[in-house]
Length: 209
Length: 158
Image (cartoon, rainbow over all chains, first blue to last red; front, top):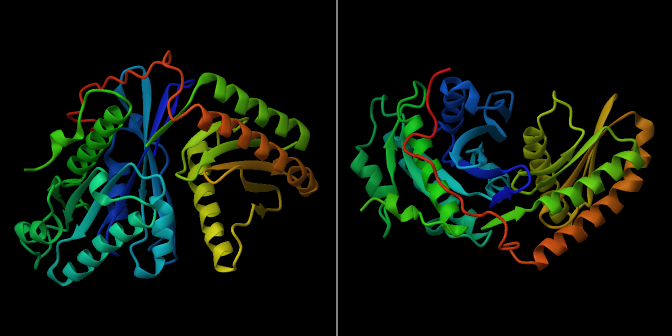
């Protein structure tokens, strides 16, 4: 849920990175934090376990100068991917404006990808939201590893809906595809925001046909 | 969905926060929503990022709300984390909005617990007014959000 503070001329938007355990959600945010220009970013915060697995969420605030006269703050979250932390995933999804679904491209992870995608839809439905009504993009991560499924197979598996969404190949550890994904979800969320608040832009411009 | 605070709303909320700080002798306080957005804050030090406090505060309160439901309660109305030097109290103003109070010294715990509920109630009333006027405020407010070039919003490089 976007928030506008007319006094401070600030707009706050929330983007969540979702996906199965160990698919690279945290790596995406770490890479963004490491590589992004200093004037765009705040502190990186991670609530994780002793084994560096995400327990609650990772978080970084990103600032952008994209709406005239307003400071736009994107609040970037990850969810914990492990199956047992579903309640926490639902909590982190509250008030979400845009989603990046990070899939693990390795063949053995296909079932986990599908299960996580279904879980995303269920958790949104529990809040009265439908995935098709929310800006989201897909990221097929770990493309540098052996034994990865072809992209067209991942598209068939995860992007085979009435409205196909933008998708990106990535190697989050070295930054490949990370900023393309980030910039696209930011664009989609911004266009949705402007459209909802009475502007003229339409996020449908970015649908894949 | 989008919601907005106008300058007058922020001023009213600030007055509530200032009054709470005066009465309770707390160090600082802020209002956030369950998504973790910062709505207003008062006297937050430069070393404390209100965005981080909001993100964690909203997460902690939501997790506590789930615990309450598991135990058959609608919610625990406040969460208190007490440290040796500094403490934090999080209370709900309504379903969406949280009041977060940071304070020092064990002796102030009672004052904060005493005055925070009344402040939360005052915040709730302000948000009832905001809700009553509808999602959109007066037409005179500038809502002509004009996008700049969104081709590459975030660039790499330090």
